[in-house]
Image (cartoon, rainbow, N blue to C red; front, side, top):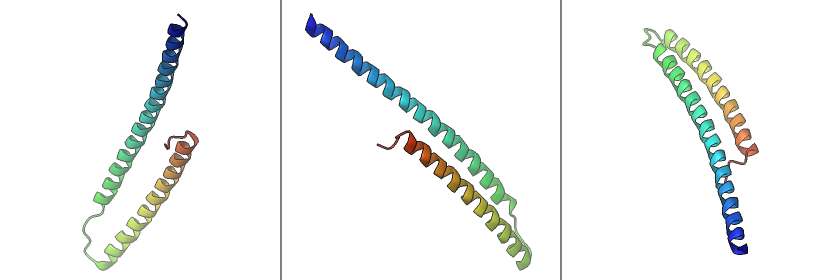
Length: 98
């Protein structure tokens, strides 16, 4: 009877560990989906921005368009770098790296 109790407690402990691990993975998956949705939104915005730049008739127009695009791109890179830094901090704090 003692062995049965020991085996039962061992099984119960194993089940709790698996349950806890599954809950952590579910949380990770939800965070991944949120990040993926943000990425899709950003890609949609970037695509819209690129489509807004049409053909130019003169070199000056093209240079102006290039300057506007460069500023927009730099802003996007800064925002993504900031978001990536925040995400890395979150992942490190939650020990998601194996």
